[in-house]
Image (tube, rainbow, N blue to C red; front, side, top):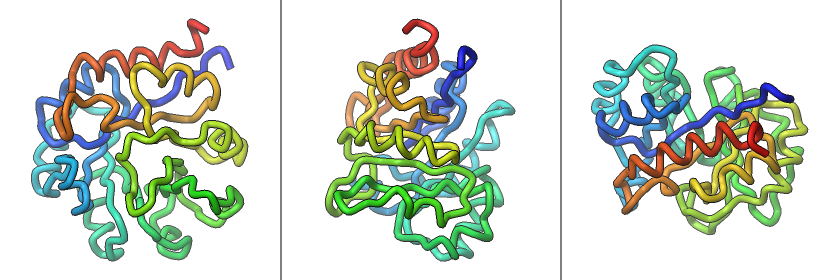
Length: 213
């Protein structure tokens, strides 16, 4: 796997300035959080504002709507102006099926979580995040990397999330070998305030993790 380089998604984008900087720094995907609970961490963006940002992005950048337990009509509406939808709630396999490859199904590594439960979902990719009671991502808690490595072995593109920062993302990539890595709070100077230097370092460390190991 000499040519292996993970994809990098920066989530919690709320401004055009941050979005364009992420693109220039080498991010592969940007996440726009439409879940109301994201307001508590200042990472919520109105879908109309996300559309205006998406229209000004360079080509080849993947845009992702992050949502929780939305009706299928709302989810499909998001897909009318963004490339993928990341489902962070209790959406069923039946709910995900018609979305096909455009769905990224998120799972939280709760104590009772079973990897085999992921197989029922025909999403284009899985995302594995840390588990914190009463919270769906963005907590800053590190995911179980051993479990994530086992999830990679399922054969579906696996995006690793949960507590990733510029300081630990290289080691996470070396240990897990995920398809991609995802961060929001790990590149912020305050809740919802992106730190451009941290974004640059995160992307650099993630993409060079294997080549310099």
